[in-house]
Image (cartoon, rainbow over all chains, first blue to last red; front, top):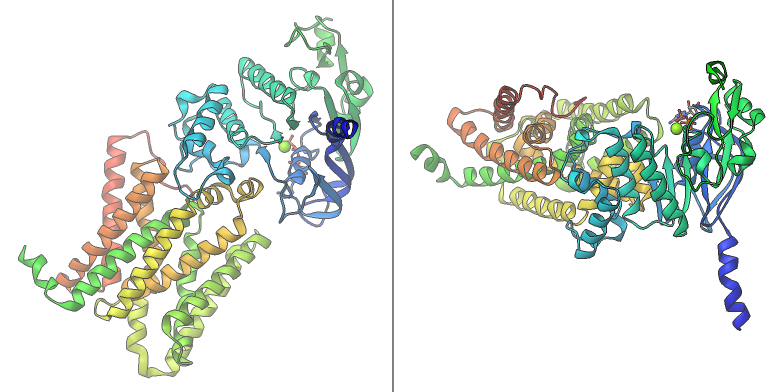
Length: 286
Length: 281
Ligand SMILES: Nc1ncnc2c1ncn2[C@@H]1O[C@H](COP(=O)(O)OP(=O)(O)OP(=O)(O)O)[C@@H](O)[C@H]1O
Ligand SMILES: [Mg+2]
């Protein structure tokens, strides 16, 4: 009895949260992703990197059941995902380009949307909802902007607002599409350390990013895609960030520079401290 | 003063006034969602479609509200399905479905000349046409739709803002959209006698656009749009009585006039805000 009970948590922890098996999918007749497989263990923090148009956004949308499936299977948290059945308890931060910024809602109204499934039948917030929303805004440092119309926010503020919307429902999986695009250095660092905190709290996170040095290199696990939408490498940054993988990913030669050659590490405690830059950096002087 | 009191002495006018005010408020309420979802064209098409349903249900001896309502709801579902499936051809498909339905109505009327008068009223609105029964239907539709918007406020707002993402947050967007279609069809049928088929789209679009000029706040937008809609409905009825004009046209012209004034005032006061209330109306 005792041993069984003790064993259970470890079984749950090691069970994959996300499983994509031989998936082919796309929006029209021509598939975007072909025969892609991916496993994300519960509690993992995964970064997806690759060139523009590689299908990173598509891969994230697959997890939400938003991309028409041609073949293969997706399970998230043990549930088979289809268009009619998006996975429960998932928080999604879309790429900002897809948002209608003229829509007449305040930042707070927009954040509250993320709590819709947890709220009662009335339009107003319960005391608990109010507490959660204001704590989340506080955590992201956008409390003072709560009454602003969303168009009147800067890019970084908009990003944090969408992150807040994803967090107010207390999701067990976070799916983030370039959550640090158009953020300044400080905001980017804040968002990353917030995500690291959530990761340590046990939230499974899948995120795309274009920032190889400052974001991707800090993450525990990376999935690299090339321009043919194939997954060409997976693993911790120190393993996948090799010159061969990088050049296959971006179709140009990339030089790996060691710690200190270009700048100082973003996070002093990060165990991976190599920095990357395109080959011009070599000419400037190494 | 006398000018206001005198028409109130007539029962038909009291009915018409109540109906126009309710319909104005109702259109103002749903219009906010119609405009934000960029569905103005659908509202326009749907009202024409409903006209076909009204003629057919008259011919086969069905109750007008039942027949026209059902026809409208089915058209709305069809339009929804088409919009989901083929993003590119949606406009054309909506045009085909709704104008064909309208044409059926016109063709049948031209064959049966006897009820031309009634359908002229359906096309342009008729101040004399509102019976106690009509008023009961309009009141019920208003109450039910308002209650539904109240209960589904959060789901409807999220779906309107971004249906795709709302679905991933567990909002049953398909049901919300179907429910909205039903409410829209019911509203159009209820509004037909007051505003007339050809002008319903204006009653749906102008009040929220006017309200949008003065507020960025969604809750305020809803109440202001309803207020403007109700005001234009009631006010339009008096104007229509005084000057002996078609009720629907008067309501719409009044609303347009108010929009013009608010637009001018807000732009004079705030010259930086040169954008239209809703982009791509
Ligand atoms: N809604 C859509 N309909 C049709 N094709 C699409 C759609 N969205 C994306 N695609 C196509 O799918 C491919 C992958 O796009 P995706 O947005 O996933 O790339 P990405 O890796 O996220 O790029 P970026 O880094 O620029 O955001 C592209 O070739 C794109 O043209
Ligand atoms: Mg993308």
